[in-house]
Image (cartoon, rainbow, N blue to C red):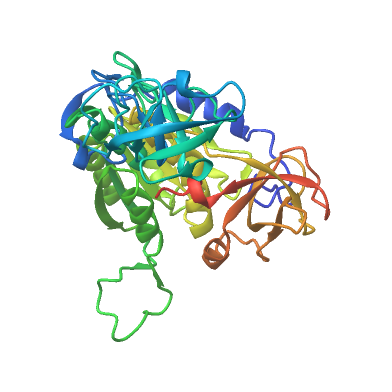
Length: 424
């Protein structure tokens, strides 16, 4: 009788590490960067704040009008019926009215203009009866309405952005509104990556003759490069490493000497040509190697010297799934970010999905909102780990729990949208 070894075809493998435990080990071992640098806010998009940002000004700096209308003091509002008020001038944005107004007077005011001294209310232009030099208002006017108070948005001394904030476009605008020209951000990570395999043909090779027999184009390196390009890291592409122990060890040692994180693709299973596994076990400290997930069972993680190491599978879909579930959150954590985990939403599945208990599965799906306003998802079809086109056709990952024994139409599943999950 053949004594079969554990493999990715097995329904369950007792020695596989659960995904939640792998994540716990991952984040407990990672040490975020601590060094920082000052950058102009024009260059700060997608960087991570290393200190809290406090405001030294009020925003807005003075009370101003939220609407086009007429500024008045609440004492001019009639208790019952109507009142006729005299228009004594205009206030434009950037051109304040020069004097204090009195009861019975109003100033024509435009959105953003500073409230005249003595005024505390704006009645919108649609709610008045205008004459040549006066207006009529009634008792429906609400005192204090349509006025933005000084410091209403941001007050002096307020912490407006916190350490660990991943700066977005709105944050840059907030910084500019406070008159802040530069901020302190954590330094960028350096990430070195390479792919492995004698069968890989680089796109920069002479392709006029097409692929040589038995060769495939090296797609994984371009996938990794694209994924890293949106994470504000210094990515170092070390190319293709051929299947031999000497080259693999040399590549790992070099990568670990220049980078905070080393990522490889391929060579982490248990085959005779899986030299990454052997070299990693020899050179580094292994935290985990095989996970209870599909695709992505042979995912190696640990340290190589001072660098974190991720040995990703060779299958193209498995590369993307393991990157999104483990590498991307790890890079965000190392960079000092507070928001590290992918967003997961509940959805109703429209497809019948095959799965056996024992592993978390990440299947490719297309999510949408149905006519009733409910989030629904359906499969992209065949889910083989080598079908990279299934990722291109998808807009989310369908997350099926380890305990689930398949999914029937109408069942609830988790979905991770690529918008917000994929870097960008």
